[in-house]
Image 1 (cartoon, rainbow, N blue to C red):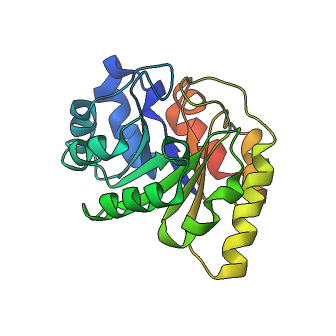
Image 2 (image 1 turned 60 degrees about the horizontal axis):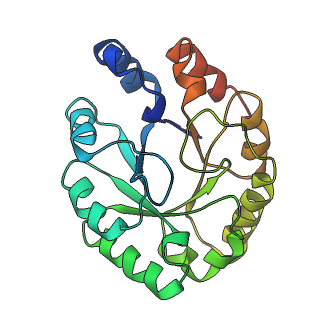
Length: 216
């Protein structure tokens, strides 16, 4: 299991206190990049990512919730991203997605693709051999602190069964409403990467991550 705290919930005034805890206890850091168009919110620019890069060796997992992921790929690649995930819904087209995958690969980054809750995960089938990660959104993207959508579990199960049947090794990641209760069902379904924001940062970071690690 990979635990990827979402810095959308990070308490930035406590950077110097919390960063060492993340370096010690987390596996990845997850960055939700929002442009105010693809989703109704704004979040981080590349300067924030760069600041984290200068203070960690953890894998920096960048999730682009933007209308022009091609443009943002370069600037985040140059500021420390290790992997970039984009949304199928930006293109709603297999060829457009393939070109985006190639662009991310050109920066020698890991490639992820994501779908919103309302999108049928099976649309990704032609792309699964070409990606390193599939991110299932278990809330509507755009804001932290939402409740987990149980129907996301079936998408995870399908992805897990598909990769086993086809000998693929992409990681399955889930983001939205993850805590020590909802994590049980997604891990049982086949998830590899848990993104957790509010749950990790509200309270003791070390304790909350430890609770997730104990879940089987």
